[in-house]
Amino acid sequence: MPYLPAEIPLPQPTVDDAPFWEACKRQELVIQRCKNCGTFRHMPMPVCYNCQSFDFEWAKVSGEGTVYSYANVTYPTHPALKDRVPFNIVVVELPDAGNVRMTSNVVDTPFEELYIGMPVEVVFEEVTEQITLPRFKRAQT
Image (cartoon, rainbow, N blue to C red):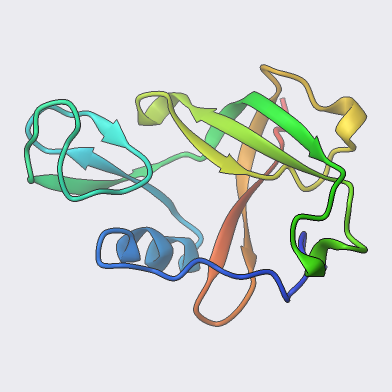
């Protein structure tokens, strides 16, 4: 069962982030990394904010992280969410990607059990043939 309804607008890959979405389809989490200074960045962009280099690569990361912040969404901000609230939105910090933070959802944990510092790991939800979304689940420790 999808985490959010099918009527929710989906990401539209761009030239900057298309490799990220292609990796998600392969069930891999990749983060853009500057080849000049090694700085990870997410969301993907053409230039490094640290050293202004245009030279980058896509680094495969484990997808293991911790909940940095979270919220319980109780107001449907899109008509498709009318019957889906409440749901969580989390910010996950990825230590093996320079501690970049990614916004997503934790799909297997009631809101009352979420906490800052909770270990999570990536799972992938194939929403369409074109888009697979990275979500997170509680890590098995």
